[in-house]
Image (cartoon, rainbow, N blue to C red; front, top):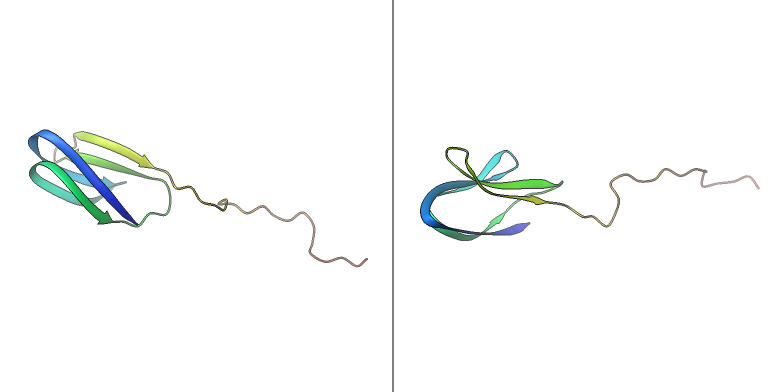
Length: 83
């Protein structure tokens, strides 16, 4: 999946984008960014834009909606019958 990242700051900052706890991409001494990156996502995930001092600039939770439920319902009767 490809996501678009766009942020701006009035002053240049050093920041990194985290996908849950893993570092995805970093910017040094920048006041804005407009980029596309490829990611792998299976479950709900939180993206965080943080400084080197762990100050949080922005946070976004991404939820995954599927057309099939995660848990399939078990059949209550068998597929065959004697009668």
